[in-house]
Length: 358
Image (cartoon, rainbow, N blue to C red; front, side, top):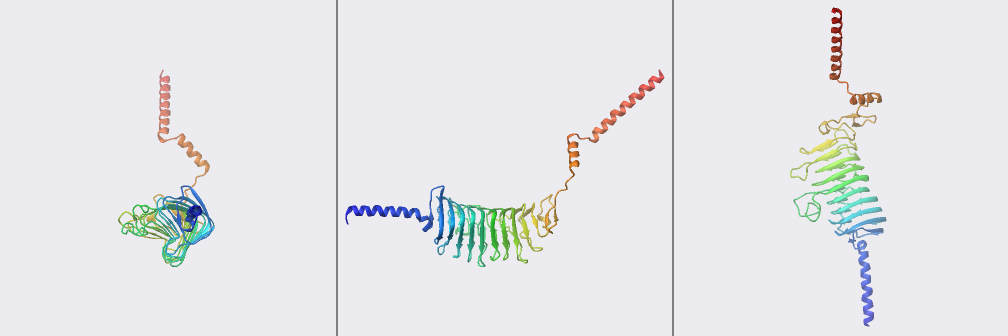
């Protein structure tokens, strides 16, 4: 072979390999894009997506379908990586692994359907995760559908189950928004599970359960909005756990939301935790032990229990109160006036008497 041809061939091969490296994130799972990179995916990706720790990427799905390779998570995000997933598409996993396993920072916000078939979870978060909009479904072999936190915090070196320093976050954080729909009616356990070390905030969404509860909290959680429905009259809507050790504090605060359940099945709670209800609408009257001080519930016109509205005074009464606050006519003021007036009368009387005597 002539040297020039060899050089040309090597150059061509190098160019091909360079281009292949650019395309590799889609076809070979690895994404190591520079910060701020964006990609649009369409068609079917059968090997899943693996987001490396140095990546900061927004992936837009253009009617794409993402499937997992055998024995793999469909989308895996390393600690240090930042992923935003948007657009329209479907994420599938039938391998007994997660559709999305996040150890970095991930946001999902789009017309995205996540389908889980088989054991394990549809979504597992050991980092920081925000799901603003997505529809998540699971079959009858799924454990819990969406999980934030660790199955066994510090008693294993397996980072899929417990906290391993440098691999994931010590206290995983998850926020669920108003566009989230999670159907857990087929799942073995809970629709949403905030597990060991987890911190969760629910700002809306629709969550349905049957096998177990719509929400299980093992550490720290706040519910600000959302619709929670238990279709199984024999199962609790919520679970609140507590275990010693510091990673299962069982602190649950409910500020609002709609809670649908059968009588006497609102929550199953372990001793040691703390549930505080400050608001919300409930199928039945919440247990008094959980209601915050100063909050009262009453049955509304829809036969549901909601926070008792404060008594509203007529506008003129409010105006009078405001005037009184600005110009208070206290008993002391009245007494002073009477005393001065009486003194004046006494003085006047004395003057008249003196005048007569004179």
